[in-house]
Length: 580
Ligand code: GLY
Image 1: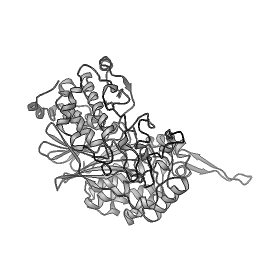
Image 2: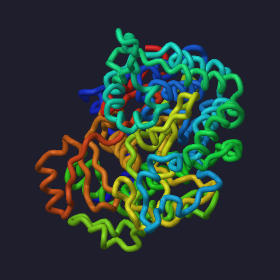
Image 3: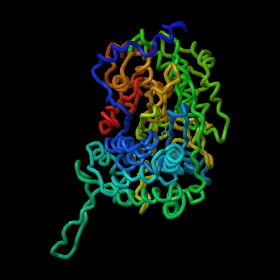
Image 4: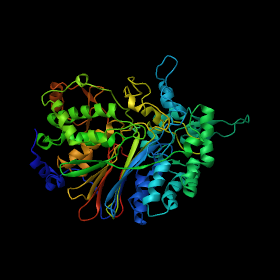
């Protein structure tokens, strides 16, 4: 199945006619494009482009709007990563605004007296919250590269919070699902559920009833609006110092959390060099540690580069088998080698080198799945959050943004800051609570990702940019999905680059996932029963799963304009063009 190096470049961007004949098509724009997981927020970004904002202005405005309209994942109380291709400068930047463990965090903080991991403490208590990074990160990007003022990019989010917006079906359903958690926190309960006062009874006693928002009802978040106003007026100081910092510290002190004003004031969101790889003549830029996203994605692309997956066919048994064997090898390294580069040396160059991929490739057998237990040095897996969110933006200057943010679980730990209107992340669960012990998702992580003061937990977020063979910006993508983020991004790229699918079809195609441990191959709906039987015959244990990821993606067109695709796996998403 391997092809010679001379043929590699010819396979890139297969037949354009094949692209045109496909059943689904991306949204087209004669100018820029914003794609996010919620339609109003995408509209905010597109309006910012129309006002003369650039891709960073639009991405930041969209992200703040998602903090209002997508409370399950958009956030002020979480963190994330950003990849930016600066069109006029023709260079890439990466921003690390991952949350950090507070100063008083310890490696054993989630262990009970018997030495076992207390799952509730690790995911649902105030101890599960790491110092939030989103506000610092979004403002750092906007201050450095934005063209509009901070106030201009924050105003739409403030208006959405204060005037409210109609609850859409996905949000209504998600709030219902999260009710047990959100209603156990009195502050979150008041924010996300209707508390109706019943008329005063003849006996003189009133009563209140808590009920779910109905689809179409207006959800107003005045406290969140006031918080956003403070950030708009004061910048990052409005969040990390002063009244909000005091409110957060008071909540932590009262509820057994660790974050204090010193932790908040010390938070930084550094600019870093993107991880760089190449695939069939294209350049791939993605996020370095403390996200595993970029390293593992590049390693996977290197491992798969010589295989003729196009000839083997999209989602054929042979293609899936080859991808899965590569995934298991890459995740083995992901779990044992990666951590926070501020606190340890990470072998990024070695892991992303073609030579290293060459040395591993013989471990991929074409006829048979290699059981995970046979791969030496294994140290199983990262968490599998599905409540991150990704947005992509293109602008008229040829700039691209790929931006992924998260609270970890849906609605984070479900605890809101009193008077401030936003939810807190439970990102501390992305650390290793105890080496060798499964996390909330039945997954286990390694020593290098142990909890330590000021450390950032390992992530799987993979905001990714692709440059064409001439080095010009082409595509931006990324996804939520915890450990499945990396394999989602991989498949979008392979579908687009190798299998001749247009951007919409590349995003839509059924996905598969494997991550070494558990030793099983997850399949979305749409992989044929024949293919599944062939995979089982090669020794794969199959697991049919619900939708994986939500790869909101954009592409710049060579003659100007752009394409966008909102992943239909999250139906509330939208690709909104700056101009038709
Ligand atoms: N919280 C999920 C991740 O960062 O991978």
